[in-house]
Image (cartoon, rainbow, N blue to C red):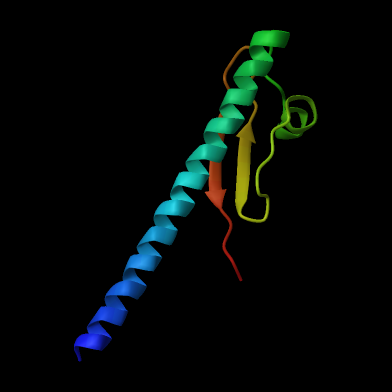
Length: 90
């Protein structure tokens, strides 16, 4: 009985760590997109209209199998709205 409780506790701990790690990764990707967009604004005087521009001109990279980046361009001089979500694994 004690062994079963210990195994269950370990499994729950691993799941909690995985969720925490995924959330940290999601935040890092979102921060990276915003940082690249701000760098573009500082150098070019405008925010890029899409994430692809940041990938090709500013070296932005993210694990596209793990994260989805929602990038809403609002205007040349308005910080875009960026939301990063975790993709669901089949």
